[in-house]
Image (cartoon, rainbow, N blue to C red; front, top):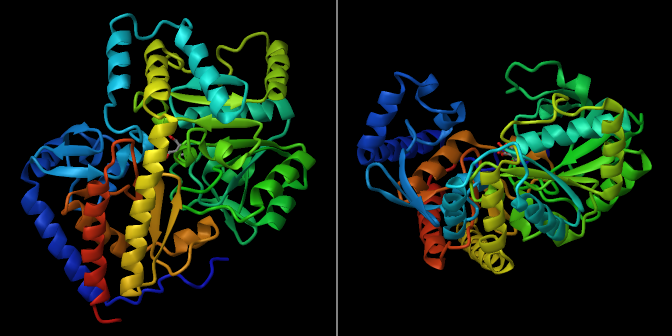
Length: 462
Ligand SMILES: Cc1ncc(COP(=O)(O)O)c(C=O)c1O
């Protein structure tokens, strides 16, 4: 059950609504060209945007981007922003990093996709192996696909039907993962669009950090794999309790269940993600988004033992081209050239050291503001990613994080920041650093955050 700390901040809701309206008016005034493009888009696009979630940005319409470079972008009205969203991790490299751009331009002139391997494939696989500690790799175009393929393979080689995920996790549009824990039973997330089957058929969902619940869920020995972010990042950042990963690894081994670690977001913890930073030992690992600097590319790695079991399984099939693991463009020459250049020249050890330093500065700034106004908020940092929550103490699982969400307050904070030239990750209050984020970028956020929280703290309580 969520702890009873949700909505601790008893703000005067009418006054908050008034502040939000004020920010909306300013936004509309300062974005006439974005508005025109949005209205034009409404004639040909569903909801006026290329993807439905783009309607969920704070503000009556989304900002239309004109160009982006490094840690900044400019919109079609000429406003410049510090980008702390960074394409929700796809641009954790900074926008258009020069090594990736050069490699892409060079490779694009020599063949983009061939259905044949290129030398870059083995270079990237070896580098991922060095970073994440797993010897064998395969490629996909999106982290969603990497997860889908890992789940299929786990079911195939264990001969078990179910997967286990954490309530309120997000692993991309993977059908099996849209499950939550409803008083001990697995149910569908309320926002699950057209599920093929009830998630309870395919999935068991438990709360993060609940070891007895994990043990109960694995007990029937019908769970092929656990699919887990090593720290939750999609219901806000929810860190593992001390010892949780040891228990997870022990219990999965004890019950013959494979452990898949999804590093797509937690790559922010360091050059080898959370896995290397914390010495995890998964059976499979998935990653996407940033590994090719924003060019679509994803990968999944596995132990020698898992790879042998997969080889044996595939031998029994005799073919693997239409078996549910595929993608004509997966592993294409362009994606792999981009991934090689990104891993070799952009997301380096030195880059991570700088990114983490910037995140520490961001965290310190936010914490100082929270303390000075004595507001019930907290912040959590994971490597170069920081999140603030509207509750006095950090959540311990997905349900607690979701229960503490405050839609109107969040919208106000996002729009307030946007109007002062700062883009935060939508849907939650998350900031990500890239290799060229500067101290001045961070301080600009801290100043805006101080202004917003100061204004809110001066409102009378409800
Ligand atoms: C942890 C995690 N895994 C996988 C994905 C899916 O990535 P993509 O949408 O690029 O397929 C996401 C997307 O947010 C994610 O957060």
